[in-house]
Length: 275
Image (cartoon, rainbow, N blue to C red):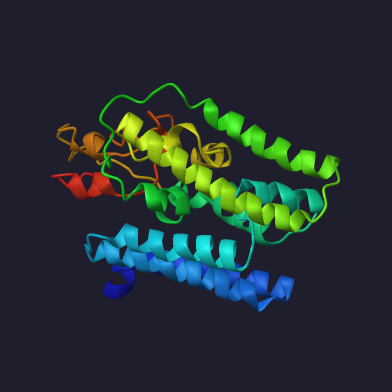
C-alpha cells in the first residue's frame, strides 16, 4: 500500500496512456498506436518515478526518450510531419491519423489534465534548447508573445495554400517541411536563447503550439500549488523558474500561470517544501 501511495502519479500516468493506447489500437486496428502511446506513457511515467526517487536528470531523461523518438523515428524514419503543419495537413485531408491524434492527446485535450507538461517533458525543440547555458532567465520577460500568433497563422496559411494550389506529392512536401521547419526552429531558438540569455525564449515568444496549449492549461488539473502556511517568501521558486511563473499564487490567473511546464525546479529548490 505504501508503494502505491508513493508512486501513485507515475502509475496513474502510465494507466492513462495505456488506456489511450489500447483504445486507439482497437478503434484504428493498428498495432502502432499500442506501441506508440505505451512507449510514451512508459517514458513519462519513468521520469516521474525518477523524480520521486530524487534523480537529478529525471526530466531530461524523459525529454530525450520522447523527443528523440518523435523527432527521429516518427519524423525522419517514418516521414510523419509532427509539427503543426502536419496537423493542418491531416485536418484538411479529413484523416484522423498521426499528427492529428498527437495534437488531440498532447496539445489540445491533454493539457486539461497536465497543462504545459508537453513543453517540459516531450518537446523535441525544447529538448535541444534546454542544453544551452541560460536555464534561468537573466531579465524580465519581453512583450513579444504576439509573435506566436503570427507563426501559428503562417503555418495554417502555408498548408492551405498548398491545397488551394493543388500542389502535387503533398506527403513529400510535408516531409521536407518537417525537416526544414525543425532546422529553422532550432536556429531561431538558439539565436534567441543567446540574444535574451534565456533557453526558453523561443517557447515564450515564437512557438505556435502554445496557441493550443495556453487555453486548456488554464484549467489543468495537475498544477504546482503553494502551501501558504509553509512559505517564507524567500523568492527562490521565482528565481529558478524558466517560464517566469509566480507559483506562490494559487489562483489560476496567477502571473504566467498558463506557462508552467511542470519542470519542478521550484519544488526542488524550495527550502521549506512548501510547493
